[in-house]
Length: 194
Image (cartoon, rainbow, N blue to C red):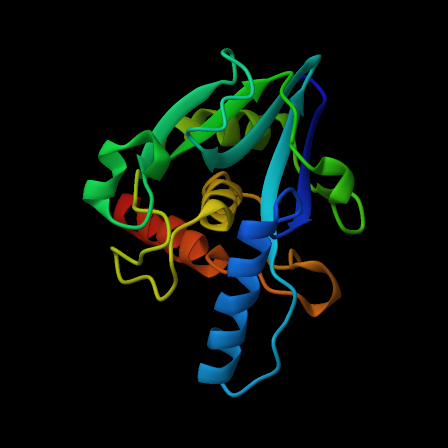
């Protein structure tokens, strides 16, 4: 089998822009107050998967941020409200981008986390990407207890492809809203398949 690596990047939410960073701080302040705790730093997860000489970036991003025509879009979904998704301004895309780039990768905290893998699980992860449910970003349509977002996607892919996610957590006690929603959905699918 070919060599394989799966790298997880924890990017500070809004590393590339003020609007997302400001909205993230407001959301976290509201969530912390509601949960009677101190606000924590928020993170956005992205993956890089290498199998043999091929390298893929897997990320959820706004559909209007067309960094390249060949950016490996395999799925899209609405943002905020399902009907808003008719406009490209309120759509996200899931990318499985060969030789792609992770915007703001240099802002990743504590560098990439090397996820223990083998080539079978890495290839399975890549095959799962186009099968991701096209749920509404920022909503909890399936009653998973958290909104669906990029963290949900990454957690769903890692768990669904058999990777050990127990030790994966945002750095410095931060939070990755949506992570648990991805894990719950992957585990539900496992139970249905069993």
